[in-house]
Image (cartoon, rainbow, N blue to C red; front, side):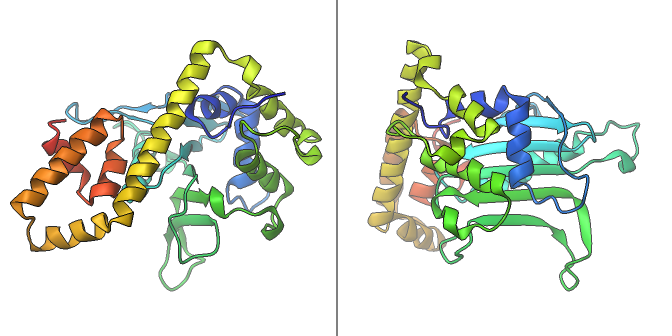
Amino acid sequence: MRYLDPKADLTFKRVFGEHPDLVISLLNALLPFEGEGEEIESVEYLPTELVPDNPLRKNIIVDVRCRDNCGRQFIVEMQMVWSKEFMQRVLFNSAKAYVRQLDGKEHYKFLEPVYSLNLVNDIFEKDIPEYYHYYRLVHELYSEKVIDGLHLIFVELPKFKPHTLTEKKMQVLWLRYLTEIEEKTVDVPQELLDTPDIRKALKVVEESAYTPAQLLGYDKFWDIIRTERTLVESALDRGFTKGMEKGMEKGLLEGESKEKHATLIRMREAGTSIDIMSVATGLPVEEIRKLLNL
């Protein structure tokens, strides 16, 4: 049996965007639920496109968005390459989903929490050994004082090691599914096959379940990811980002500016995302948009 990598855009959205029972299992395993009765029992899928109030702004599309029977909203994102803008985008998306719960006639008491689960196939907290990062609004001195509303969770998948985890069994199994299953997988660990939810998720990513056109799109996705990683790593190796940050503080030289503009054009032609361009060049996203007339 041959499998596709569940982290790819095509497979991730099929596994968790088309099977409510699987996204429920994933969320219950990875979200920081503490009290009895907090676990999700059922969900309905919501549109993944978050339309802006200002028509001049671009729409934002997330991977999976759903709501449970209590009214809580859940956003699930798979991020393959880290960029410094991603965390702000997550906060923006979560806040947008939060405020969109009400219209002008409803009371604030009807607002329900929004949970954003972000699985990152990259390391962004190099000085922190933990791979699980949970952000929420807490009192600076008294951490037990919490303003409920936004819950932001980031998981650095490359840091995950099964033997380092002591939490829930399903959390371990889902993270193993996301980090161990790929095209080269021949023998699936028995622990994964013995778990009904994981076994079903494995069935969804069997290569035979996809059309030739879908497999072509799958391969193109990985080509783009490899290109983006190469561009970022190359820029970092040359000290490009550090040099750009210093240059921006002192004022960019005209020659450097032309070189960066040419680099942005080449990256755009290669299909590189604006977030990755920002990482590689050190330029703010809005400045890149201006330079490329976006």
